[in-house]
Image (cartoon, rainbow, N blue to C red; front, side, top):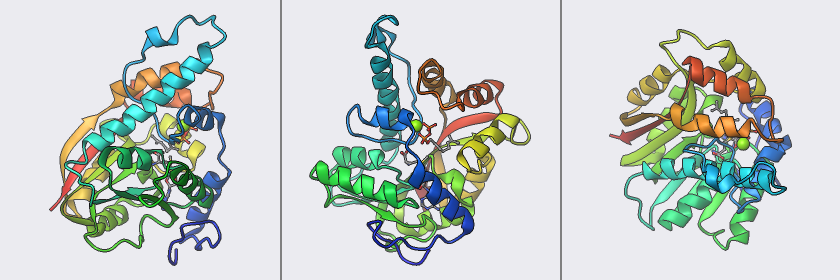
Length: 289
Ligand SMILES: C[S@@+](CC[C@H](N)C(=O)[O-])C[C@H]1O[C@@H](n2cnc3c(N)ncnc32)[C@H](O)[C@@H]1O
Ligand SMILES: CC(C)=CCC/C(C)=C/COP(=O)(O)OP(=O)(O)O
Ligand SMILES: [Mg+2]
């Protein structure tokens, strides 16, 4: 993808036909489950939630406002997921630069800036997402800190060693992991921190299960195995210092989501694969040595 742009005015050519398809997927994506949750507080996520459901906050299922409370609770759990990712970035100062690889509509970037006060650079293949994220940053008065560009995460415009920390939040299943970790390793300062939260198939199961295949088809992505993450990191000077199995913590989110009118049809594949052990929801944090 030659160059990167901060707007949809000039969109660089995708590096591969596949990336063109992924750009089209996200340029066309407008699922209510994502927009209704983001409308709660203006933080728009494209990832899943973790944590216990606050059933007291949901109230009576017969209330006319019940589904609105479920939407707010699902969103709270998705923002809680971002907080756990940010907890693993280490000590970040106001003068640092963070990189969000596959930034979506920018909810994690806004939360990172709100927590650390620093610059957050995001890349996405989707011009629509980049424009949306940049408009949200302008609306919040943080446009000089939070910026999304249309750019391939495997070929970013960032200087070598520029970032104190970088992450993939449910965006690593669209690229080759060795290519990805090589680019993070280049952009990160020595001693910097890389974090990913991802769904990955469990090598103890053997191969991707039918549920994992359904998720791949649903999102046009290519879920990796947990071992591939660790191997690609270690081969690229990224030494894992935390590997956290978040599977038990994401199941409550999925079971609550499956009760709403916002279901997209993929809920059973996530619940079944998490419960049969073929698929895991994992956070990996690694130090750039
Ligand atoms: C499921 S969304 C996650 C968005 C965001 N990380 C979040 O947590 O809300 C996946 C994102 O990865 C981006 N993506 C996929 N392949 C990419 C690539 N090669 N370069 C840059 N972004 C990519 C998509 O454009 C999309 O924004
Ligand atoms: C854990 C894995 C394998 C995720 C694949 C990446 C992905 C599409 C995440 C959710 O995006 P979204 O929030 O747009 O999806 P949905 O419409 O289901 O909420
Ligand atoms: Mg979603």
